[in-house]
Length: 304
Image (cartoon, rainbow, N blue to C red):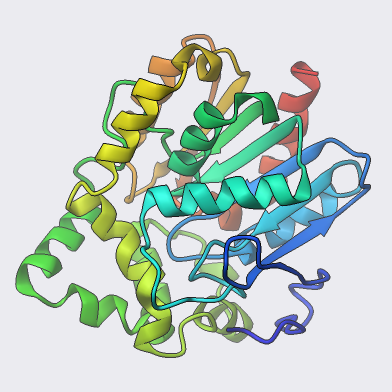
């Protein structure tokens, strides 16, 4: 685990908070007025809350901004005796939200944060007010629940078939930038020694990479599908479809194909706003953080 007081040369200045409500040490930050509208930001593969670092400060001037690190990522613990699946992460998220008693949430999600947000909203519609999505799918719009055929999932299939995937992803501490480029990282100007250290720090050894290894395998082997189908059968899809939603879609996303993201979004939110952005990759928070803050604030204002 990253030391709790690590700020990465002041680029992560937020007060660390921890909870054990899901049976492991989970890190999160909770910034802004406690009586402000709640924005809950969910990261994906292979990042952590650091991905939102340039959005937290401006948003927390008005909103209560909560950013957890999923099990196995960031400053959270990586237990070796747990199952790392979409279902597990959603159940962890439910316990986290209940522990903080977050309500009227604006869910902000990217990559795996989307499927988590979709399942969470279906299972807990009373807690969610809006969904702001970036380069992701919720997985309930009639398309595929993850990226379809993209360079990232082609790479996953190739190396899993060759028996080399676990070895490569198990070295995430030294390969994280290369992996992020395969998924669609674009903003090379953001990369310096501090950036590399911040994204590498959660993965000092192979055991610490178990979360990053299992996210893509959950898709490759379709392990997430029974949970998705069960959620659809047991929950009211209309409750999800009734939420205000917006999608930001970068055209340089190599992890989740933009056409799949748009198709899944339209299947759920026919009149929802889609913001296509040229030259923006999968990790849009690194490419256009200021614009994302503006889009999000405008979206919330339109749907009070």
